[in-house]
Image 1: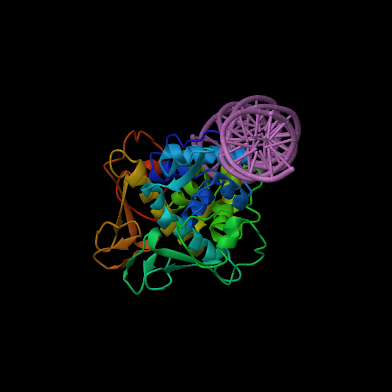
Image 2 (image 1 turned 45 degrees about the horizontal axis):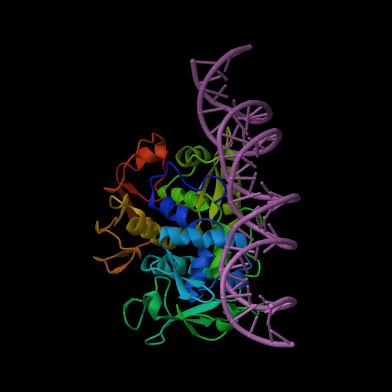
Length: 173
Length: 173
DNA sequence: CTACCACGGTTCGGTGAATGAACTAACATC
DNA sequence: GATGTTAGTTCATTCACCGAACCGTGGTAG
């Protein structure tokens, strides 16, 4: 977060949250992790982020307790990054922000639609399912491409996987 | 947002939202505007932000349609910055993020408590009032200092105003 | 056995944004 | 006329982001 990573003197939870999440790219990394992206190369290919920055962001998120790094193969040694329970709780703010963007900055309708996987009902901005009458956690959400999805000419694995309905957190690649 | 303000190639509403809100300080400016801060000097005193950066952020938020700049006095000419309806809609993501910070990063309990002004009920992370059974907009919220509020030795007008219960959006200073 | 490739990084020089201090401008008050 | 208030802008320095190149580990193909 560009010089002075912290918001010293701000005794405020929003400031504390932004010390963890407020740097460039960080929230998009978390979003991708929610989609089910786990590997360095997939984050990199989908985000077009400099490798050095991605490396630093992943390490910072692990330190903060949002992501967990774990070995999934020994030869050659390979690690993957998965959301912790604390990271999965970011679903609510991430959805709220994305929905704000949909409503106020999207010209052609929503780019992604979020549905309750149990009953197919679209979620509102608070991740509530009208049919079930309760707030739906990330684990029970399915993403589908929406009408506002344009210029999607990307050919990386993540973009391809999201062109069809996809259960959140389901591993991509 | 530090070189390359945009997330080109990300056909995603979250990325679009972050192009507007993702730079350092921006979301804290919005939070202060929700508290009722309107004047340049009050933002500056409360945030300890370089004046040049504050000036740039306010202008960007006005351009984006989150804030409105309006003349409140002619001699000498003085403008104030107030949230537009689009800006007020940021209440939900801002609250969700702040609550995430409270739950996961605050050692001594919540720093700020948010209540429904009509009935006094504390709000949950979705800004819902348990008594009224609905989601409460920013206009009907009151902030109160919480037990986690420490080291609050600031003497600026905003910090002083928030040491007692305060209706959101009520002008400070 | 050697060459090559994939993956997951680190290193490095160049660029541009954030910072804090100083300066400017308009107007009011003493 | 001197000083103060508010809202900025300017400027040199510091630091983060950027992209390209490089590195290390361990498969795999010839």
